[in-house]
Image (cartoon, rainbow, N blue to C red):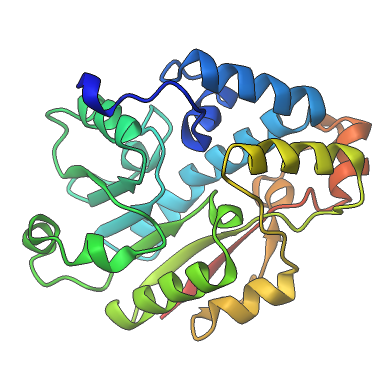
Length: 265
C-alpha cells in the first residue's frame, strides 16, 4: 500500500464498519473508535451484520430475479467474501466505489484478477463523477439498465447530498433499473446510547442524519417503490427476534431502526 495515502491519525467510518464485521483491514485508531461505539451501543455489531447480510439478498434480487447484468454499488466498503460480486451469476459486471483511498487500495488488492469486477475511488454524494469516468463508460459500453446499490451509508449524507445523488442516478439510468436503498437511522434520538453513538461519529467528522421513513420516501422521489415497500432489516432476513437483546429493543424499537427497499426506474 502506498504510504502517501495512509492517514492513521483519525478513524474512518468505512474501516470502523470493517472492524464491526470482524474484518482485518483497519487501523488501531479505527478499532479504538469502534470499541467506544460498541461500549455506548452494544447492538451496533448486530446491525452491521444485518446490513452486510442484506447484500447477499440484494445481489441475487438484482441479478437473478430482475435479470440485471450490471450492478453499480456506492460506498461499498471492503469487498470481502460475502459482498455483491460473490453472489451474482458469472459474467455479471460489478462496479464498486468508495471515497476512502485506503479502502479503495485494499479493495483493489483483494479483487486483483477477479473478472468483471472493478473498484474506483468516488464519493457517493457525487455519483456523476463515477458514471462519467472514461474507464467506467468503457466498462458499461452504453448499458444504463442497471442495478444500483445504495446501502449502509445514507445516514452520513445530508438531505441535499442524498437528494442530489438519487436524482442523478434516476436521470442517468434507463427504465427497468432498480435501486436497492437502505433507509438508515430511523431512530429514537432521546435514548442515551443513541445519543452517545451519534456524538462519537460527530467527533469523527461523520455526523448522523436521522430521518423518518416519510422523509426517506420524499428524498427518493421520483424513484418508484416496489410493492413490498420499506422492510425492516430484521424482517428482511426473517431472523428470530430473540437474537436481539433487550437493549436493542429499547434503542431501536420493534423495527430495529434500519429498513431496506427496492426502488424502480
